[in-house]
Amino acid sequence: MGFLFLPMIRSVPQFISFATFLVFVLSCTTSFIATEAYDPLDPNGNITIKWDILSWTPDGYVAAVTLFNFQKYRHIQAPGWSLGWTWAKKEVIWNMVGGQATEQGDCSRFKTTLPHCCKKTPTVVDLLPGTPYNQQYTNCCKGGVLSSWVQDPEKAVGSFQISVGQAGTTNKTVRLPKNFTLNTPGPGYTCARAKVVKPTKFISPDKRRVTQAMMTWNVTCTYSQILAQKTPTCCVSLSSFYNDTIVPCPNCSCGCQRNATHPGSCVEPDSPYLASVVSASNKNSYTPLVRCTAHMCPIRVHWHVKVNYKQYWRVKVTVTNFNYRMNYSDWNMVVQHPNFDNLTQIFSYNYKSITPYATINDTGMLWGIKFYNDILMQAGPLGNVQSELLFQKDEATFTFDKGWAFPRRVYFNGDNCVMPPPDAYPWLPNSGFRQYVSLLTLIMTCLSTIAGRLLLAIVLYDCSCSQTLLLVELPDYVVMMNT
Image 1 (cartoon, one colour):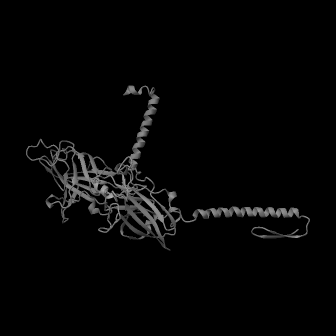
Image 2: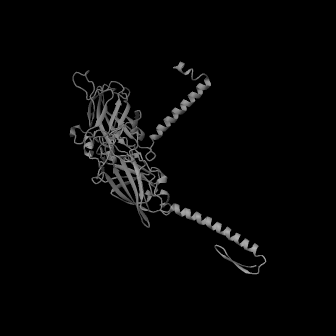
Image 3: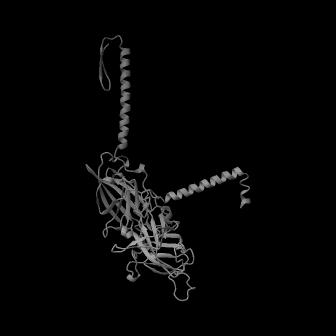
C-alpha cells in the first residue's frame, strides 16, 4: 500500500498535512455520530442490562438477567425486545426460565442431555403473556414490551433466568459475554461493553434478610434515532383561531411519494384496492405502509390554538395515525412549551412534567388513559386521539405574537418530530399592515411639516411689501402674521 501513496505524497510535509486532514475528518465524523445519540430532553436515558450470578454449578452458573428501561418517554412496544451477545469461550445455555433463545444451534457434540442453546451468538426473547406458571420468572412474560419509566416504572423492567454451562465456576475464571446487541424490534440501540460492578443485594419479601449475588456486571445501551431509521417518523402541523392559515407538515418530512420506483410505499385512502393491499401487506414488516400525503409521515401531531380567555388560553392537540400496518399501544408524546409551568387542566390525556432542565418546567409528557385512548389505532376513521389543554396566562411572558403559542419541540414515542419553519407559523391578523401604516404616517407627517415651512417662506418672500393680513394654513396648525 505504501507504493500506492508515493505518486500522491512526495514529501514528508505533504504527508503530515494529509494525515492531519484525515484525522480532522474522522474526528468530525465521530463527533457528529455521537451528537445524534444525545437526547437533550432525556440526557441520562438508557436501557441497563444487569447480569447477576445467583449460584455456581459444576460446569458454570445460574444467573438472573434483568433489563431496566431508564428512559423517561421511550418505551419498547410489541413485538418486543430481543437481546443478543457473543460468548467469550464455548459456553452453552442449559436451561432458561422466563425467556427463550430463538435458535438452538448445533448441539451435535452432546450425546445425552441437549442444551437449550449451543450458538456462539445466541438471541434471547421474552415469553408471551399466558405462559404456564412453572415457566415464568419475575417480571417476565410481557412479550418483550417495556413501558417508559415515567408512564409505569413497574412495567419498565423485564427479566429471565439462565443456566450457563462450560463456563467459569468462580469470579476469577468466569468470562463476561461481549458484543451485546439490543433490538426493539428494529435497530437503534448501541450497547457498551459489560462492566463488573458491586454485587446486587436482594431483600427477602419479609424484609428481614438480605442476600447477595456472587458476581454482577452491567451493560448500558443508548438509543440513536438516526440508527433506528433513516427518515423521521412524525411531523407537526399548526393552526389558530386568530388566523385562517393552517400550516401543514413540511413537504417530504418523512420521505417523498415514490410509487413509480418503489411500489407500495403509500396507499391512497380512496383506492378501491385499499382493503386488499392492507390485508396482503407483511404484518411482520416494520416498514410503515402510510397513506399518501405530502409529508409521508406515519404520525402527524396537530397543535391548534383554540380559545383565548381573559386569564387562560386553550389548545387542542390531535395525533393522527397514517400507518396502515401498526396500532401504537401505550403511545406517548412529549411537548416543550414555556407555558407548561402554568398548565391548569388537561382533558383525555395523562400528564407529567419531566423538567429536563432542573427548575425550568417547560416540558410535559402526555399519554393515553388506560382502556380509553391508550391505543392509537391504525390509519382510518378511528386512527386518531385528541385532547385539550388549558393554560393560565403569565402576564410577564404570554403573547400570541411571533408564534409564541406554538410548541418548541414535539416527540412521539421518543422520536423527534419535524416542525414547520418558524416563518410559516400563523401570525396575528394585520400585524404586517399595522407596521406599514405606522411607517407611512411617520413619512407623511415629516413631508407635511417640510411643505408647510416651505409655503411660509414663499409667502414671506413674495409679499414683503404688502400690509395685508395673511392666513397661512399648515397641516397641523394655523399661523397668523402681519406683513
